Every structure is written in C-alpha cells, then in structure tokens.
Length: 398
Image (cartoon, rainbow, N blue to C red; front, top):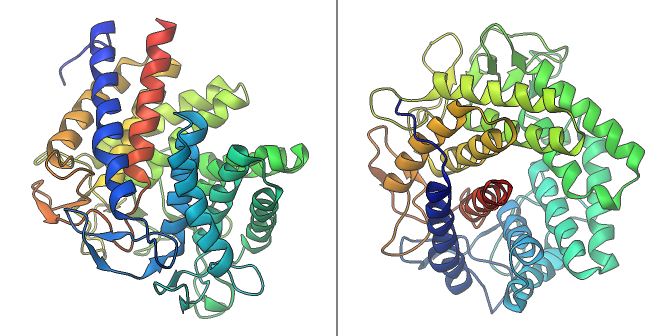
C-alpha cells in the first residue's frame, strides 16, 4: 500500500472536498426532495434524480433525518432552515410514530397510519437520538422528555428487544446480537445530558464490555454479529456471521468513548480492531469492503454478501480518520486514502447529488436509487460531516 503522508496541503484539500460535497451535493438533495409538505415527515424512497417512487415512511429513517438536520444545526452551522426541517419531521413523529405504549412503529403510510408493528427496537433508538439532538437545539422540554422516556424503554427491552414479535422458538438456540450494544454505545453519549450520570456510567461500562470483550474474538481479531447469551461462539450460520461495516462503525463509537472517558487504551484497541477488520474484509480482487462474511470462510446465507454498500465505506472513513487523529498510526492514514479513493470513485454522484447505495462486487451500480427502505438522510451526510470535523481538528492541532 502506498504511504501517503497526512501533510497540511493534503488535509486542506480533503477539507475542501468533503465540505463542498456536503454543502453543495448532499444536504441540498434532501432539502429539495424529501420534505412531505402535505402530510408531514419525509419521503425517503427517492430515485437517482430525487423523484419519489414510494410514499411509505420508515420510522428509523424519519428519525435519522430529524437527527441529521438537528446535528447540522448544532455542530456545523445554525441555519434556520435546517432547524425547521428537523422540527418538521419531529412533528410528524410525535403525532404518528409511536403506539399507546410509547413503542415506535417500524413503518407508516404517507398519512401516518401504521403499517408494521413496533417489532424493531432500532426505531426507538433513532427516535431517542432525534429528540435528544432537537432538545440540544431548542431547549424544548417536550423533546427532552420524549428522548428520556424512549431511552428508558430501550433499557427495559434490551434483553428481549423484539418482545412478542420474536420469531425464535422458545428454548431453542439462543443468540444475542451485536447491533443493540453497538448502537447503545453511541446513543448513551448522544443523550448523556438528559440522564443521571450514574446511569450513563453503568450503561457505558456494560456496553464497552459487551462490544470489546463479549463479541470480540481476539484470536481472529474480529467482531462477530451473534454470540450465545453467555458470550460463546456458536457454530451455525448466524454464529459465524461477520459484518465488517458494523464492527468498524462500532470502533469509532469506542474511540469517542475512549476520548470522553480518557481511556487511551480503549482507543488503541479500537484502532487495532478497525485495521484487522479491514484487512479481513477488503476485497483484494475488486476493491471495496464485503458486506457479509463467514469467520470460517464458509458460504454465507446472505445473497448480497459480496455487494459493496455506501454506509460501510463511509463509516470506515470516519473510523480511520478518528483513529489517525488519536494515535498517529500511519496504517490508518494509508487505509483512509485507499478507502477514500474507492468510495469517491464508485459511490459519489456529481451529476445528481447524494451517493449511490448499492454496488455489485465489481463496483458497478446495482440500484441507482438515492433512498429507500434502508437508505435515507443519514450515513452520507453524517459520514461527510464527521470526516470534515476530524480533518479540521487535525489541521488545527498541526
């Protein structure tokens, strides 16, 4: 791998590139195309050019977009139209998003009528993030209270997140999944100002242990998606499953926690796992990071295993820059340049804005959509924003 130094000129060049993409090609795309002015909330099923091709509304994408515009307002530039965009989505969520028990639906129709039950706890996670960030922007207690109550609900459900919607046969093979502790590590930091400090500390201690000890298998240097309830390897399809993007995204969450808690050893370990995961997950024939893998090299059951996805590469860029900023590890910078080149060449769409989401193994666009059931206004703008902010920190400290 070619060693490209992170010199001042290169950092300035990257700052300009990421800022222009965010300001001129990504945020304007969502501002122009996603707002539903008739029924509230956002359209996320958008074609390459931004045309709406389906009007269903998915709660976690609605909440992610609220969070994104509130985050931009809080940490990037206090544009009134960004705050208005966030509150527009929040009003729709407050009115339609949750059932009588305060659990958040998975999806609604355009008018806000429920389509799919609240089986997915990640709707609740992103609702918490959205209203926590809006509370920071506005100081409105209704937002803070909603974030707080939803977070407490998540903690109550964390041992059985699907509840009555769990499809597993009782008493059969039990597995716990990496995704919830992973997202809680970020979520707890997002809303720490709204919660008792002892609860935050207790939650973070548990989650750091889960992410960095229970799901991490040091002999392989890899993080598994599923383990037994007591943290053991289970030799089945689900037990052997790797999701390199999930693992790497979790590692920059750990780096943020390491900085917050003044734990440099946590940052160093997160950097090591990031680099080991990249070495394992990089497609050495065609470039890019595989979506799913099997820790023993067996065939996966996910037919999309060899696709290259937008969010995986953006989260990797964030992790590598944070890793380099905190440790100065040159391997982080070398990998950053390599992933940066791949991502900008294959995902960015300078003609119509935003980024493509789904490529085949060879790097050709599989679906020209810019949004859908799983892709919304989140990973691209968040990734660009966090890369930009880390690059600016690097520039300032040099």
